[in-house]
Image (cartoon, rainbow, N blue to C red; front, side, top):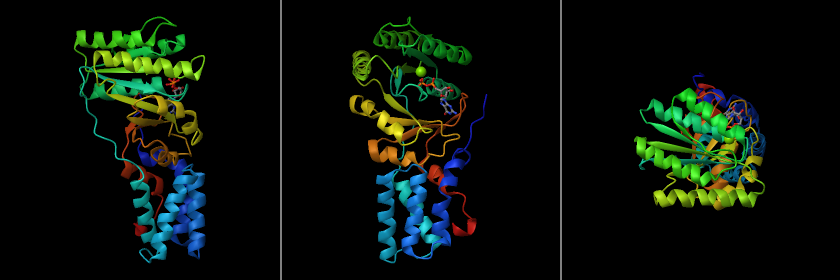
Length: 307
Ligand SMILES: Nc1nc2c(ncn2[C@@H]2O[C@H](COP(=O)(O)OP(=O)(O)O)[C@@H](O)[C@H]2O)c(=O)[nH]1
Ligand SMILES: [Mg+2]
């Protein structure tokens, strides 16, 4: 089982793309215009996106013009501050339900099923008793995949057969958790159906049925986004944002991605906090999101004198 990496490690490739920003800020550029150009190119290359890059540039431009910052270290400190201010601080983990219901939604292949298993593992380590619900009934392989994770973890997995109603699976899962006194139900869902409309209708029904059992369920609905796809993942997931009561994002596959800058675009585009980050395929490869540590990981290839 992989031990899990730090932000500094998983952001290495993104940081390489940002090196232009640092070179610019820390002295390469001979004028303010050149500095801003270096920052712009670096941010765009790391997939921060045009809109957020423009916000960052405006803040820097403004501070430079008013003489609030002058030299490299000051500009860098401001840059850190601006980037961090763009990342909402996630709420602390809490388990208010009986059981707490956590739903994972998102495009096929983005990492929902793996994340369900990782969260179950994480909470199991904290002494919670989780249960997995196989509500992606569109693909037989998805049910088996979740079942295998449940076996590895030694926890129950509620499953019906392929093609059955996902809302019925979730309903049974909550009942089973209550009957067995379990704390958390993780609902894995489909990322693809015959049409997008059908998928959204199915997920909305899932929420309605859960609310019949507990008016405030699902207590968390996480949108799972694939960092290796970068900005494009945001466009692909738009439907989910419009149809579901999302409470946060899990950004998967940050390991090996040079597009970690998309984390900054997520908050801006969706107004959602990132809650966890996936750093590999193993059960332990999940980090709770921390804006300060994340920004530090983005910009840490800096000589200490510049801090
Ligand atoms: N490297 C890496 N691979 C991941 C991560 N999360 C998921 N995957 C892989 O991505 C693929 C799709 O994941 P899966 O959970 O089946 O996606 P789903 O279709 O959304 O349920 C699998 O091969 C996973 O092992 C991650 O954080 N890092
Ligand atoms: Mg899946």
